[in-house]
Amino acid sequence: MKWQRPIKCILLAVAAIATTLVAFNIEVSRDWAFICENTGSRKGYRQWSFGPKTGHWHEKSPLEEFVAEHKPDALAHRWTSYAGTGKNIFGSSLSFGHGSPGAVLQFEHSLQDWWIERHSEEEVIELYGLFVYENQTAIDKTVTEIWEEYLK
Image 1 (cartoon, rainbow, N blue to C red):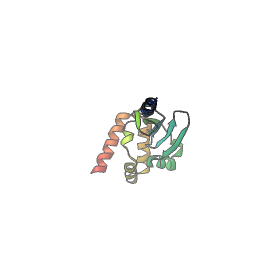
Image 2 (image 1 turned 180 degrees about the horizontal axis):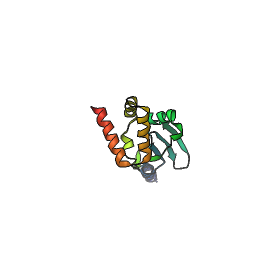
Image 3 (image 1 turned 180 degrees about the vertical axis):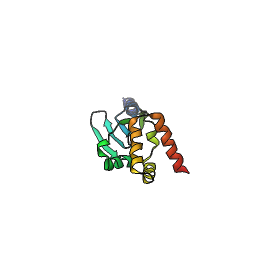
Image 4 (image 1 turned 90 degrees about the horizontal axis):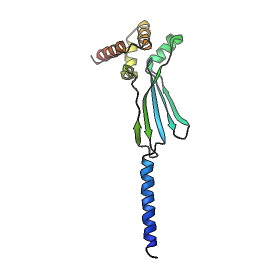
């Protein structure tokens, strides 16, 4: 009966290894992030596989704050997912699901601050209108021009 103890230890070790391997490959949560294609504002939360959403956050962009202050009736959001990262029980990333929101993703908040400080109210509202209009070619061109102006 001396052989029973080593076999139990081996079985427990195999079970522990199998459990760990399974735990590494089971998604328990997904971190979601969204960007407003009209303003560049961002928000997100963690969705747990058993139902609840936690850790809600929202970061208003300078463009959203400007429009809310100067033309609040015009403010509208168009949220697009740009990150959806699945995590296991240990917090390691398992899966990725990222959308494609376009050039607004490169229109960083610090760049928005810089640009808004240098332009009139009408120009800022016009830029907001460009994002709302959804002409991706024009948006790409404008954001590229703003970056070029900034980098000079």
